[in-house]
Length: 153
Image (tube, helix red, strand yellow):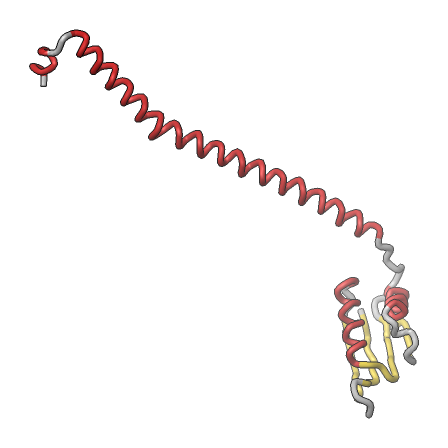
């Protein structure tokens, strides 16, 4: 190889050297620099999208907090249950609501639709986390009608 290089003229040697430099530079660019910059741009786009998501989530959280603040909760469990009964069309049904200490309320329905009762109790739990501590259900002769005594907490 040394002999071959020595046989070349000075202009041919310069051409070969420049060719090697160009090939090495192109190899470095296409094998290292281009993938690096492409990944960098991709990561910048991902970060920007995640910042947008974070901003949206923070706005949504602030809106949820403001909506929670607007809901005026009744002062005690008795008024909460009374309001809930009125809002769920159970007001027309023969019922009795009485306090049982500060933390419990006894509710009695003499004749109520079991389906409506379950829906009301579900809303009461989902919206206000009111739970049943004791329940007594008696089936009536009419379909889907029951007499209920329950203690809520």
